[in-house]
Image 1 (cartoon, helix red, strand yellow):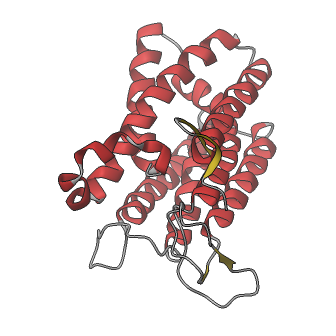
Image 2 (cartoon, helix red, strand yellow):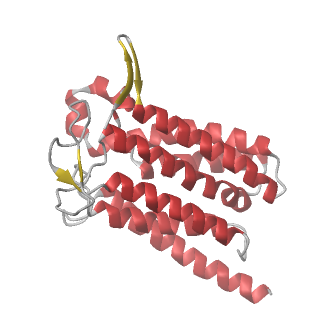
Length: 256
């Protein structure tokens, strides 16, 4: 693949950063359109995504640095080179949720309804952003001999060279796009505000935890040296979301 899309000497356009930006713009664009479905002004979405952008990058990078602390302890300047890859979704997710809760509380806006508005857009944007991982070679898979395995040959990338690997980046692209379609279907059938968002985090966490088994890069140890930190967080988050879905669905049914 091509980690560096354009190289003009002192000016370099990194493919990872480009798709990260495209994914973010797609999430904002779609969420603004989706706000009309909920009779909400799109200015709220603009403010919210600015907070999401800043907090998610900081949180995602922080968790990545934490997982790979031994490397960054000896190479502190590498912490700031996010164009080389190295953002952990759950770190960004936790930071963004916290920041958004504060913003929505300050603006006195409905939290559950707003979360439903942006959930499909986030899934869509995440799917697009994962193309950056594919081009950069980060988030690469374990070695395999499947007919759809991929081989990286560009020395500027982050993946092992000239070996066939699970296309985990493509797994994540497809799973996020399928999740986007599921959320759009659910949106017109939901029983309560917050249902779309809860289904999003439940399914995403489950998908991510499953795909992690095929990852070949170091993911950190969490439980008994067999689960990565992202898998541990994902399973906990997915379980909490499932419990909340069951509880709130029963409450919604009781009120009808």
